[in-house]
Each structure stands twice: as C-alpha cells, then as structure tokens.
Length: 356
Image 1 (cartoon, rainbow, N blue to C red):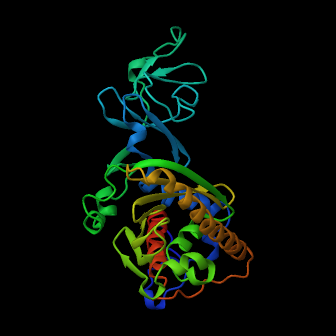
Image 2: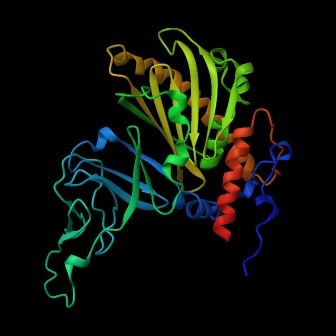
Image 3: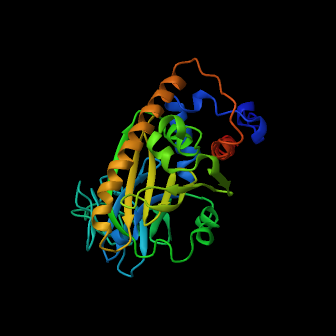
C-alpha cells in the first residue's frame, strides 16, 4: 500500500493557496521527480515545421534525459525516434540537418532507415541468432499545431486538449506564413519552475520591468485559465518602430512552453531543465513574410534582451532564496497570481500521480 502524499501536494483553492515548498526547486531529488512526473508525461515543443520540410530533414532534441531525432521519413511522415543506437547507445545524429538518406550511428556505423528499422550492422555475421530485421529504434509521439512540432515520450494529454481554445482566440489567419528569424538562448541559475512561475504573473512587472510596464496597461492586465494552458493579456501601446498598438497575448502551455503573440510577430519560448537546478530558455522569433520584418527583429532583440536580463537577475535571486533554508511557502495573491496557482496545481497533480 503506497504512502499518502504530503499535505503540501493536496489541492488548494486559489483564495487560500500557498506556493510550492522550496524543496521542489532545490536538489537532485526535485530534478528526478520533475523528469519522471512532468517531462516524461508531457508534450514538448521541439521544432518548427520549416525545419522538417523535406525527406530526411531532421532535428535533434532531448526530453526527460532521452535523446531524440525528429525526422521526415521516405513516406513524408514525421517520426520521433530515440537517438540511441541499439548496439551500444551511440548517437545517430549529432545536430540538425537536411536531406539525410539514412541514420548512421557515429560510434560503430550501424545504419537505420528514416523510419527506424536497422538496415545494416557491419561485421555482425558471426553473431549467432542476431537478426537485423527485428531491430528498431524506439519511438516517441509526434504531433503538430499550426507550424509547431511537439513530441512526447509517453502517455500525455492529447495535444488538442492542451491547446483547446487558442485557435478561436487568435483567429484562423493568425501566424500563417510566419518564418523563423533568430534563436536566442539564456542559461539561467534557477530551477525551470522558478522561470515559469515568474512568467505566469504580471505582479512583478511594475517592479522589475520599467520599460515594459510603460507599454502595458497594468490595471487591465488579465489572466485567463484553461485546463492545460493559461493566457495573460493586456492592451499594448508602443512606438510604431517596435510593437505598435494592439494586444499582447502571453500563452503558457503545460508544462514549459510559451507563445508570446504580439502585433506582427510570434516568439516561442522553451524552458529546458539543466542539471544543478539550472535551466536554459530558448527564444525563437518568427515574423510574417513582409519587407518590414527584415529589420524588425533587430529592434525586438534589443528590447527582449533587456527584459530577459531583468527576469534572469530576479529569478537567480529567487533560486538563492529557495536554497537558503529560510523560505517557507508563502501565500499567493489571488488577483495577480492565479496563473502561478494554476501551474502549481498541475504540478501537485503530476507529483501525486507519480507517487501513486
């Protein structure tokens, strides 16, 4: 009979809720639990469809410690294959690429078809009862939304359920034809959940982001919750050579994907856990195919980098506070931190499920 979960993992109503205890952000046990309970059971943003347009085009990634290669096979289907040779665990692909005919292990040359079947194993003739036809690379799930490609190692909620309602909110024509412009990554000295917590509330904006605060209407800043995602949005007023006017839509999708939809651009974020309670945040910038977009990303990059450096600094301070032994889980602000509460409730449910 399994032990009951600790009281801190019980569901909490928003009006009386507290944040997760510090031990969920600190130490190797917390990292192992997240790998098992969250990342091995969720959809992860992995690529843009333009990276996988042709036969043999492939992208390498990693989910919950498992190396993956996503490839378009000879039939035009997307495959998410374990990037781990069945011989002695060598890598089949070391980086993203185009037009591969086969997947060949860099260690001993075992070669696989693009759908994961072993095609050849050099000098294995003397191996008794070895049948190459029975050897296949394990697969992960792969699915798409608009031009974004997601993967999942194991059982996860249907991707449609995670994204339900977003299409209706942004409109069918939104993001159509957007093309990739630039990736920027930040390695941050905080647990991945600290960064997500910070993203999920505008409570800190007047105190941490003075320039951004001047563009957003903090009094009108709203958070809307769905089953597996949340939306923060506010009217936006900025100069025409930056964002212009419109709505700023900040979508968070369980557990670690963000879609920042601003007038005339899309920015996707992936918050990737790193060992030692650190994380890497990858920002991909996309723009519609118009002439004005050529220089727009340069202005966006300068402003985005300034905002991110402000977030990085406060998140690293928070991580030090969580690791200090001083912090006892504090009360959440029901008006401004409903998105944080929503995230923590999903985490609590995932942790309870992993313990059951």
